[in-house]
Amino acid sequence: MDIIFIDDLRLTTLIGIYPREKAVPQTVEISLQIGTTTVNAGASDDIRDTIDYAVVVDRLRNELASRHFNLLEKLAEHIANILLDDFGAAWVRISIAKLGMMRGVRRVGVTIERGERGLTP
Image 1 (cartoon, one colour):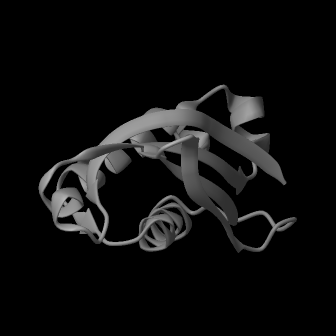
Image 2: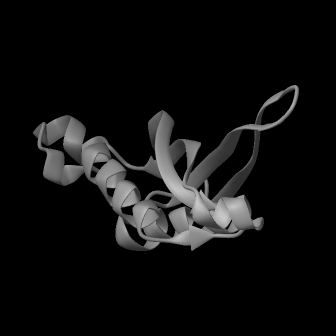
């Protein structure tokens, strides 16, 4: 399995359970590892033969701009489902962090893995 990665993507969304978090958008930092095969793209040199990371980023920007999530875990599951179902990834690893949420803590977050690592779509 090959991995397409997107590191330290910063997006703004409504995330959290507290009233202020439901009213004021926050920046989250997202890192993605997307398991797929890149054999065809490597041979053809054609973006249509792979998962286009620019399309992934645009989709996530649009999704997060229009939704509220209570928990980072729910946001991570939502992103995993998009990558697996809509982009055809076989496996994903998603890390999402809130920045500067607590005194003395730079980041808090969650990492999930979904799908079958080692398989190719």
